[in-house]
Amino acid sequence: MEVTGIISGLIIGIVIGALGRLVVPGRQRIPIWLTIVIGVVAALVGTALAAALGVADTRGIDWIELGIQVALAALGVSLTVGMYGRRGR
Image (tube, rainbow, N blue to C red; front, side, top):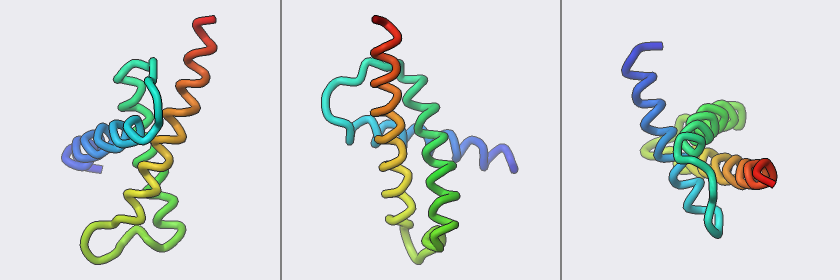
């Protein structure tokens, strides 16, 4: 993997994490760095899942892959908010 691939992966992860956070209703009391980590992981797992389903390479924008990534990020943010909230109690 090249440096440009890593940088673009981080940028996509930030965007996916932010979209996932926006999809989850209510206020999320988790740090922004954790949202970014969730976004990066969701982007990687979403890409692998889309490839396994055969929808990773389509003409134009890969909307199905993007939807999978955002859904995984939203799920990750929801689970993390639930666990992070319990930690403080």
